[in-house]
Length: 361
Ligand SMILES: *Cc1c(COP(=O)(O)O)cnc(C)c1O
Image (tube, rainbow, N blue to C red; front, side, top):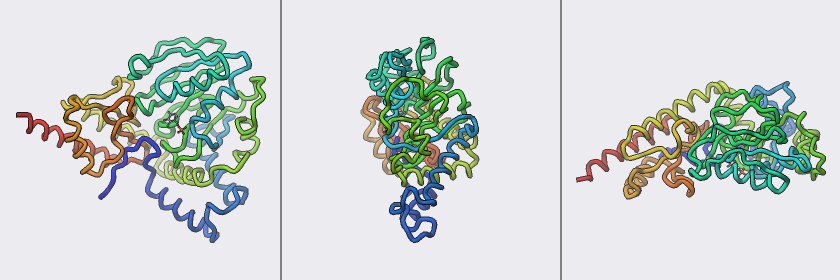
């Protein structure tokens, strides 16, 4: 049976990425050697890293604009502390927008380094919306936000214009929609949501913002050291970088971010229309802040959950239960999820409606 994978991360990747990366594990570039047993300093792997870094910048429209792309270890969670380490001045200050679990995890780390101002938070409403009216202290060393809140299903549609560097955690919507990426000075994303397998983190930095903190930064946590070493300061996560490169190549071949954005919007429109139409469901997030990547929705009557759960499982749908902090369901519609899978889910929701309506009497 075909499986429709709605996992929030690690998540679905293009089938050709699974095939090509499997081949590379057995015989990389017809060398007779596995990708997993060659030196990361070999010509073949250096080429992979160089291409992945260049292609990431190209797809974001950031090449030749003073940006560097790095593939690091440690996930987005390590960036929560690398960002303040590299950008918050000694006795300085940082500004954060609190839009969800991941934003607040980033705030927790920043507080270790210095004054961390939360400019606004939607925590008391269980993060069902994105705060839009807030003031950022002009003396903050940087402003940090989360473009897509994976757990709550909200997404920032616009970003403030500020005099300080803007840092954005784009783990769950990078490469999914067109934005003017030059408005950001530092973007980071764990690969496993929309770019590749777990194990690599993409960091895109405007290098001119570095070197201003007066802090003594341990080498492995120093962006400048990674830039100087061309993302090879130590052994990089070779498999994750290679599979990410394949995913980026697939995206480029598919028409880049603009083309995938159209499909992503169509997928989200299809599902949200059903959530809004079907009397047995309701969306969890504020309509204007809804994410096109992670759609969160709830049953109007929790008692019907066993019926719905049986139906979607029978249809080959996987990974649909919501995060424990929201409950209900979460459909993660990352780039590689085909619109056909969304249609299967919509059909199941309509079947469910009929079933419940029939048994009501
Ligand atoms: C998943 C996620 C993280 C955590 O990523 P790790 O790579 O597991 O550290 C951080 N931020 C956002 C927005 C996420 O979706």
